[in-house]
Amino acid sequence: MDISAQKSLNQLSYKRSIRNGLLQVSLGCLALLLGVLVYLVDRTGAPANFIQDWMTELTDAGEFAGVLKGQLPDFLHIYAFILISASFISPTKKNLLRVCIAWISIECLLEIGQHSAFSQAVVSWIPEYFSHIPLLRNAQNYFLNGTFDWLDITGFFVGSLCAYFTVSFINRRSRT
Image (tube, rainbow, N blue to C red; front, side, top):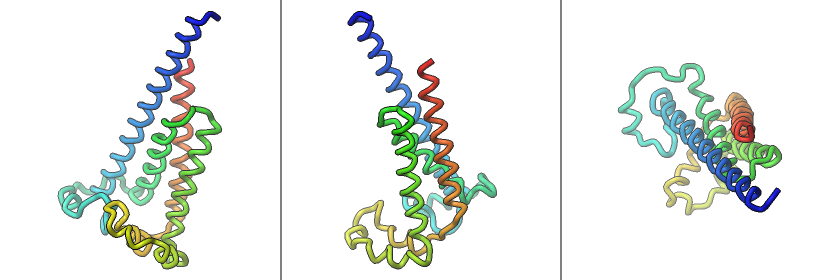
């Protein structure tokens, strides 16, 4: 293969990689928006950190996610973050598996931290300066008022499996 043919092949591969990454980020953002919609429409009680109380009052649309409203945000969160994270790595199955394992570990540790056997200890490790950082100021409440649920962990595993297959499909489709 001559140099110009190799250069053309490299450019094509680069363009596919960018297109795949943009598709993964777009799907990830769409999944996050769907999760926000579930919080706005279906979830009662304390909303997620980023959702203001007045926003939940504006959306009294009834049931949206039905029986899945408890675990659908967990599924969508890990699904989205795996898709977005995978868009920044070399698209190998080994790297994708690493991203999936990393996100499952993070999500499971956060969920276990809500268990009554661990929440007090976890809160004691949270530094005081977190209360001055908008996205972290509710960390203590997350662990003290959150509820450990095995179904949430199931949602993480199902979401990561779906994300793995989605990214694999996107990468495989671009090779053909």
